[in-house]
Image 1 (cartoon, one colour):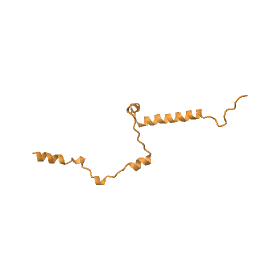
Image 2 (cartoon, helix red, strand yellow):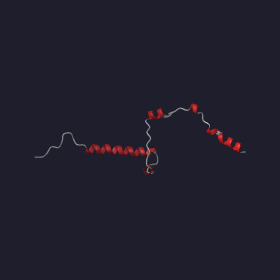
Image 3 (cartoon, one colour):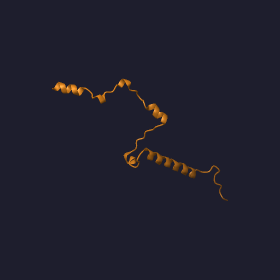
Image 4 (cartoon, one colour):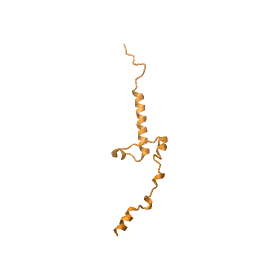
Length: 85
């Protein structure tokens, strides 16, 4: 009986049989590069604040807009300030 159990354990179930000779390394790599996809890992406390990736993108776009706006407001003029006499 032990030989029968051992033989059953050595065989893989049909759903686990995979022909690795047909596998392609980096199959999705070129597509991801073409799309410009980046993967960023968020800390758990930050991830709780966002529902999905669209919410993260919206928040980052808002932050970028804000930095561009404030940068324009704080830049000094090229002509300088003329002192009063």
